[in-house]
Each structure stands twice: as structure tokens, then as C-alpha cells.
Length: 278
Image (cartoon, rainbow, N blue to C red; front, side):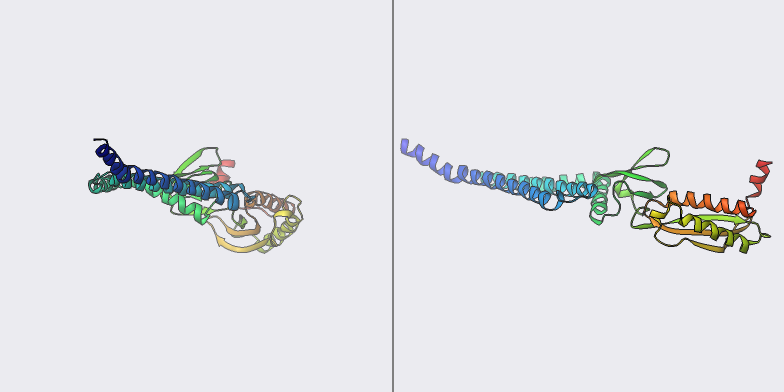
């Protein structure tokens, strides 16, 4: 009697317990390797970086990859364990497939957002702190996650934009930018004199201590750049460091109007503005 019980116990031990123990140990080792790999990547590539935004971007990618691998390992381990104890996993696999299809159909927007977030992070399209224009929204990027991008506009409002809806993004703080100022002069004005006066203003702009550190080239001026409904358009342009175009444009406009005022050259304004002023 004891021998038959022992034989049944030994058979169960070799058939179920040891394989299950091996599966559990293998699963734990695989999970441990994933954690060690993520930690090694963080030590080797993320921690040494002095760019805080790059560190955050890489950490987001590493976390997403780690959680995905852990889910796959646990799912595979559970299915193999069920198969080992004699449970037919065919229906389970079919159910998982159907459930996965239902989830994917119901979460298409979320999946699209996550894929969009991965694309933004991998391609480094923009970073936290960059000034961007996404569709009709302009502002500074405050947060980037796998699902959404938060942009704060000039009025302080935070726009939470799903990454899957970002089709075109203009980054205004990448490498360099142009500071642009356009002025209008009447059709009967001496535009050549106005251009000469503006060139004098640009010389003073180049020597301005507020602007000089940000200038990457000599400011340019384009006379007769175009026509508006009320005058001739003259454009001034300066290549500056990224993110400084608005500041430089304000100072450029200040020098331009000051030079025109000294020379007595009037700037044309729309007729309705003159009417309101009167």
C-alpha cells in the first residue's frame, strides 16, 4: 500500500511538481534578467547624460519596454504551466486572441496615442521646454508621455494633446530660428530712403548688448518684399539662436521705429486704424 502511494507521489512529483517548479524558476530568472537589463541600460546610457530631457525620454522608453517584456514573460509562463498540469490551453489561447482583438478594437485610439508617443520619443521630434506649434496650438512643451503631450500657451492655458492626433509639429527652438519684422510704407513713400534708414537701425541692433549674444549672422533687410492692401512691405530678418526669435524681433522693431522716427519716415497703417485713432 505504501509502495503504491509512494509510486503515485513520485510520478506526480516528476510529472507536475518538478516541471512547474522549473517553469516558476525560469520565469523568475527571466523577470530578473529584464530588471537587470533595464538597470544596466539606465546606468550605461541614461545616468551619464547631462540632458535632463533626454534622460526622461529614455527612462520612459525603458519603462515601457520593461513592462511589455514582463507581461509577455508572465503570460507565456502561465500558459506553459497550465499545459504542464494537463489543461488544454487551445481554448485559452483562442479566448485570449478574441479578447485581444476586442481590446484592440475598443482601444484603437489609445494604441494610436501610444504609438505616436513612441515615435515622438524615438525620433526626438521635440523636447520638454521646446516652443512648438501643433495644429492651431502654440506654446511651450511641459510634459511628454506615451499617451499625450502637454503644451502651455502664451495665456497660461495647458493643452493636453493626444499623441495620436499630432500629424504636424513645428519646433521653434531647434538649432536656430529667424527673427522677422515687417513694416508697411505708403505707395507714395520713398521706400529707398526708408530702407537706408532701417539699415542704420539694424547696425545699432547688431551692437545691442541684449541681442549680440544671440545673433548668428548679420541682420538682413528686404526692400519691396511685397505689397499689402495699404502699402509696400519691407521685411527685416536676423538669424538667431533657437528660442530667442521673439525677443530679438521685439528689439529689432524698437530700433527700426526709433530710426524711422529720427529720420521722419512715417510707417503706413491700415485705414481703419487711422479712423479709430481720429
